Image 1 (cartoon, rainbow, N blue to C red):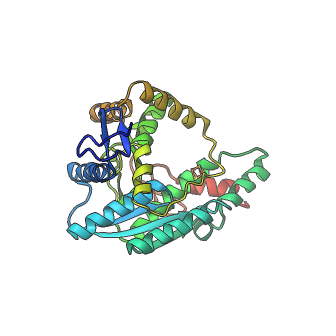
Image 2 (spheres, protein in one colour; image 1 turned 135 degrees about the vertical axis):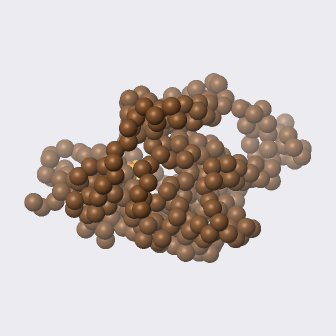
Image 3 (cartoon, rainbow, N blue to C red; image 1 turned 30 degrees about the vertical axis):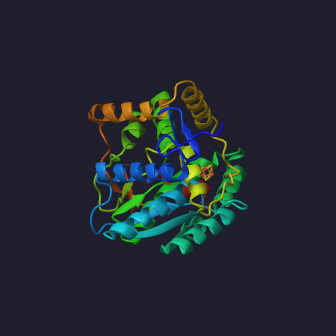
Length: 313
Ligand code: SF4
């Protein structure tokens, strides 16, 4: 039996267990668009004349985010839009996904910018990982290097592009996983930093991050990107080995399967208790890194500490 759209009776492309609703292509895309626009409006993510830089990767989430923001911009025209890709230097992976990111920007007519680890730090991620292994004799967790330098460059790149907002393509699954992982690790400081309106100490060198896809489950970002025929890559990073995060993802997916809607519950509940959490945790004062001048809560930022670790000195 063909599943029918709960709104119009046409063949459905998705059945949402948590709502008990099936949707056809037209109503599904319309609903995703509605939810993203609602998130943007509700949390005042984009203001008139804002310059928004979207962090893109060549993957489905950032492809969908750029497309939806471009459509919004065309319709409302009150903000500027640019895309920024960080090339970590992962052979056989980023070089491939980058092609899709460029193609997407060309197709959507959005200016494309690229910052690379090699140009900014003198080494690719592959070289950093190799150096760490040579110097310290064990396999390093590449994501520690990658995450630190990527965050650093996204902020620096967006700031140099004079962005008011840096849009990140985190979906509902990413948020639910981050919330639960921080809770299980007992990392309150990190926990208070996530949320619809990220908590950060105001600083002229920080660009405000926004997450318009935060209400859209990963399954739906993939389907929407496919239905909209966006160019994106499904390639997986060869370093993806964060076993803990993988376990958290599996647990949440297992629970979602049994108790539909649990991902929304995790995020919604967290949003409600977050103001109380924030009052418990004292955020560090922001200062300038003694080596590079970027904002940090320590004397030296984490990027400079890692660079020194694998440097020649
Ligand atoms: Fe970077 Fe790790 Fe993600 Fe690969 S899996 S892109 S190394 S954070």
